[in-house]
Image 1 (cartoon, rainbow, N blue to C red):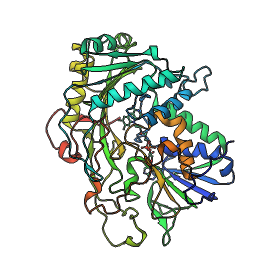
Image 2 (image 1 turned 60 degrees about the vertical axis):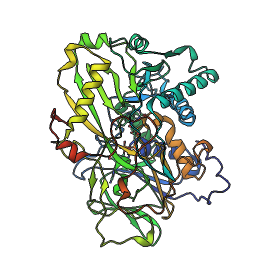
Image 3 (image 1 turned 120 degrees about the vertical axis):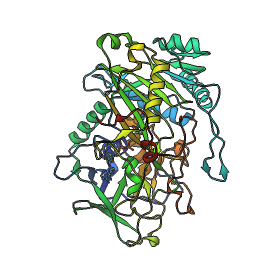
Image 4 (image 1 turned 45 degrees about the vertical axis):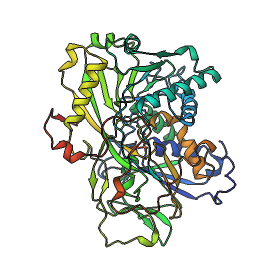
Length: 498
Ligand SMILES: Cc1cc2nc3c(=O)[nH]c(=O)nc-3n(C[C@H](O)[C@H](O)[C@H](O)COP(=O)(O)OP(=O)(O)OC[C@H]3O[C@@H](n4cnc5c(N)ncnc54)[C@H](O)[C@@H]3O)c2cc1C
C-alpha cells in the first residue's frame, strides 16, 4: 500500500471520505478505483463503481460503447507537450512488462510496433476557436509533430528505456514510404519512433477489471445514473434510472463523453464523435502488414494501426461531430443557487452509439476520409473497394487545449470530475488512476497543476455549451460538424454497428 503525497500548501484541506462513488468504469474510473485501493489513506473508504447498463442485464465494466473499449489504442510518448511525454514514459514501464502471462503488456495486450508520426507542409485553414482572451492561433499538425520529435529525442537522451537510436527523422515522402513498408506514404515530414506502439484496449481493460475485482474492495453496480443527488451545496450521491439511489461522501464523475449529461460542463468540455472503420483482410495480407508501424498524420488526423486477427483498423482523430441533445434530466448546474428543476435542460452534445441506436451509420464525409487514409497509407488495389466489415462512432470528451479535466467542482462540495480525455487518455491507463487519486487528495502532480484544473469560465453565455474546439494541433477535419446534419448527407452508407 502507498500513501498519498502531501497536499499542495495552497489547497483546501482534505479529509478522507468514508464512502466514494465512481460513475464510469472506463480508463479514468477503473484506474482510479484501483489506485484508491492501494492507498493507506483510503483503507477504510467504501468504494463503489457504477456503469451504464440496463438493470435487467448483468452489466459490463466498462460498457461496450465506452471510449476505452476497442481492438487497439496507440501508446506513444510522442507529444508536443513534455508533461504528457513524461507521463507516457511512466506508463510504458508498465506496458512493457511482458515476461509473465499475468503482466499488463503480455498476451498481446501491448505491441511495440513503432509509430510513424507525420504532418503535411501546408497547414489546414486557421480555425476561430473560442479561447481565453480572444482567438487562439492554431498550432498545426506539423508544429505538433516537430514539437513531439524534440520531446521524444530529449526523453531518449535521458532515459535508456527509450533509446534515441530507435528514433529516426523522415525528411520527405519517400523516406516516409520506406519506413511504412506498405508502398504508401502520408505527409511531407515526420519521424519514426520504434519506442512507441499500440495496445489491445479491450483486453487491457479486462486485465484491469480483474485486478480491481481481486482487491475485493470495490462494489460494482450495473445501472445508469440519471442525475446527481444533492442537498443545498453538497453532492450526496446519484440516482439511477431505475430509481435506486447510491449515496456517498465523495462522488467522482468519470463518465467520459457522457459527463456533460450529469454535470454542466459548458465551456469546459464537449462530447465529439469520431469515426472508425474495420476491414477484414486475408492471412496473406496480414502477413504482408506484419512489420508495419502505426501511422498517424497529425494534419489530417488519419491513422492506421497494424492488423490483428485479420482485421485492419483505420480511424480519424478529428474535431469530430457534436450531437446536440436535450437531456431527460437537467445536468447539475454550475452554481447550486441556479438549480431549477422546472427549467428544461439546454441541449448538450451527448454520445450516440451503436449500443443504443443499432441502426446508426457513420457520416459519408467520415467514411470518405477513412477510404482516403487507406488509399494513402496502404494503397493496395485489393483493399480499395473492400467494404468495411464494421464501423463505429466513438466519443471523446474534448477540452479546448486537450488537457484533461481532473479536479474538484468549484461550487459543489464533495463532487470531483475526472474527464476531458480529449481522445488521448488510453495510454495512461497504468498511471492515470494514481494521478487522479493524488488530485482527489488535493496533491495534483506539479506538472499538471493549472492544466487539469476546472477552467475559469464563470460567465459562459447561454448556448455556448458546445463551443469548445480542441486546438492542440493534433486534429484533422472540420470543427463544429453536427452529427445529424452530416448523417443526412448522401454518400457511402456504412452501418455503425459492431
Ligand atoms: C476513436 C478513438 C480512438 C482513440 N485512440 C486513442 C489512442 O490511440 N491512444 C490513446 O491513448 N487514447 C485514444 N483514445 C482515447 C481513449 O480511448 C480515451 O481517452 C479513454 O478511453 C477515455 O476514458 P474515460 O474513462 O474518460 O471514458 P470512457 O471509456 O468512455 O468511460 C466512461 C464510462 O462511463 C460510463 N457512463 C457514462 N454515463 C454514465 C451514467 N449516466 N451512468 C453510469 N455510467 C455512465 C460509460 O458507460 C463508460 O463506460 C481514443 C478514443 C477514441 C474514441
